[in-house]
Length: 82
Image (tube, rainbow, N blue to C red):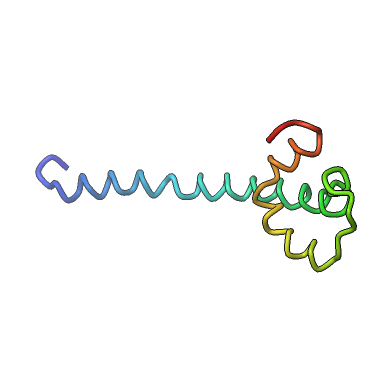
């Protein structure tokens, strides 16, 4: 690939594409951890933060955010400052 600069760009571009499956796997692990934590939080853990009753509709609306922010929810649930 000494004489062809386009071939060198293809090889460099291929290295960048190798990072995509790693990123998607990490995102999948994050989501796989977030779903059960969000379910636990919305069923039982929310009472530790807010004593007011929560409707099922509110729980459904909060589920995606809880999946995304599960590390913060764990920190708040165990009493830490997040």
